[in-house]
Amino acid sequence: MKFLHTADLHLGRQFNGISLEEDHGAVLDQIVAAIHRRQPNALIIAGDIFDRAAPPATAVRQFNTFMRRVAEETDAAVLLIAGNHDSGDRIESMSVMNDIRRGMVRGMISADERPFMLHDDHGVVAFSGLPFSYEYTARECFADETLATPEDVLKAQVAAARRHVPDGARWVILAHVFVAGAEPSDAERPLARVGGIESVSANVFSGASYVALGHLHRPQMVGSDHIRYSGAPLAFGFDEADHVKSMNLVELNADGVVAIDEIPFRPTREVRVLKGRHAELLAHEPSGDFIKAVLTDETPIIEAMKRLRDVFPNACQLTYQRDERVSAPQSLSISEFQAIKPMDLVAAFVEQVRVDPITDPERSVVETALSDLHQSEDAA
Image (tube, rainbow, N blue to C red; front, side, top):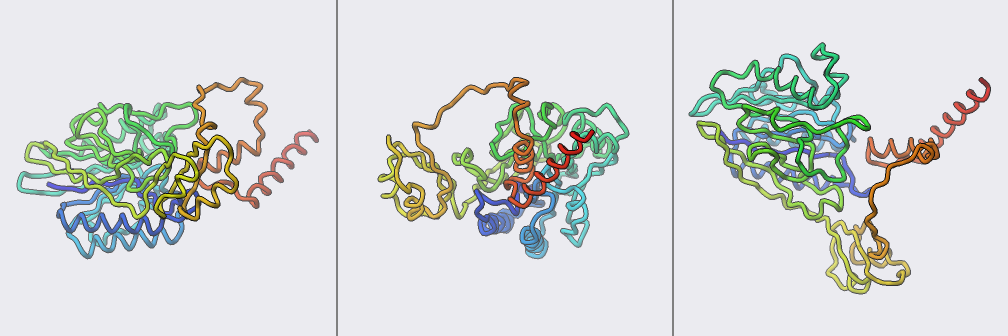
């Protein structure tokens, strides 16, 4: 049994305000090409198909076109779950495959999670899709008010799925979680409420032949060789400049032993950090890559970014090495916390939730609402 494990497409995302639609199109083409070339029985997408709960229409069309190609050009089943960036309802309602024998879509958690079954010469492989869910939704689903952490939720999901796995079947789990010990990136949104513990133990997956994970953008194994993040196909921040992006071709033998082949993606635009004097960077070959320039010049350069963009039109960030200081994290005192302006707090929250910063019209609406709130408090 062979399947292709991918995750964290984040369709609709931008890189520092620059559209990634063509970049996403290129990696989707590479996934289809890998299916043609390697002939897997199934394609797995382990969450964060879209970058936000209400993705732009262009992203939805791009994904539908991709799914149509997989359905019409290949024999692979498609197995996908919702991630924390997705709308579970939207994913649940997507009719990605006309033939239900070729697809499993899990947008919302279920207390009666029944696996999708595929067969090979050695018997049955059961695929359980465990979509991302916050605790309050899981409490309602499982009628259990004690579910307080992401690990509590995952344990309940795994237990619900395990009940329906046939005896002797090889078991594959799809999940969108942060497994303890894994290495995150800056672009990932926390899975727990502020102050909560978002990581889960790899031991929760006991009994699975392979665990296809989504959420973390760096390809990696965690806990055991068969528990893996495929990673995102594109780099979404300069901290990911050293990541080799890939998809996992996984093969299960009769005993459920896994062989994994990492198939690298070839992005149309790389994410690179260049360090050196300004004049040295200007001497580089022109490139459309996303660039962060770290200048070693001792004095500021006039119009440094403007001149740099003559060579690197997608240069996004520019800093000076002398200004890059690694300072120890400091906790806020009560007085410092109270000094944070409400507008700044709202703006930071908006940018964390949807990535894009708050717009001027939105800022105006919030400021008006805050002003009305202050006036009502004064009147009281």
